[in-house]
Amino acid sequence: MDLAGISSSTPAGYVIVYLCAALAMIVFSFMAVRSRLILRAATYLLFALISTAVMYFQLGYQFLGAVQIAVYAGGIMVLFVFAILLTHRPDEKSAPLTSHRKTVGICCSVCGSVLLILALFNMPLLDGMSINQCLAASDPITMEMIGHAFTGSERFQYLLPFEAVSVLLLACIIGGVVVARKR
Image 1 (cartoon, rainbow, N blue to C red):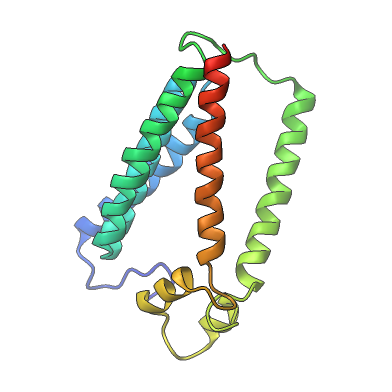
Image 2: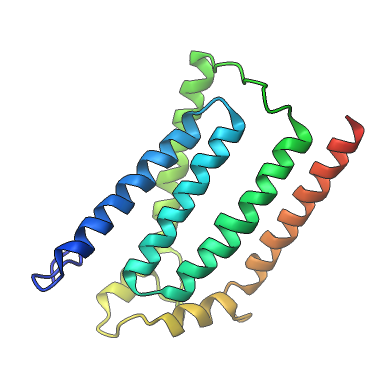
């Protein structure tokens, strides 16, 4: 198998679906960020999330694809749309960013992306090993190992941060309702 994960025995239909989903994900993500109409940006984000689900289905992870559609594309997007409608009028357009704010935003995005990539490849994930060490090891990483790492509560496992994010989402929902009631 080559670096792209596509062997000579892969049917052309899978490659075409992969390329279409990847292109859709990139285009809709960019359009979600660039749109000044907030409901339209939420719709573009929905399409990007659905494209991500198609990628999961392509990789053979049907459960993750179904969860992506049900939880993110379904539930979270409905939550976003209701939060938007509770806090903003749909016809409001945001003011364009000034060049100073764009420059600062682009610099922060690039720095954040570099730091995230460095953390991703160097931070311990499975049994205290980083991704670089896992890739260099001869044992393959299975979905069971990844699931155990995400749902475990021991060292180098991520149940507590996952629960912290869910509490943060709940706090955002409550904050949106409070802001909407004060309006």
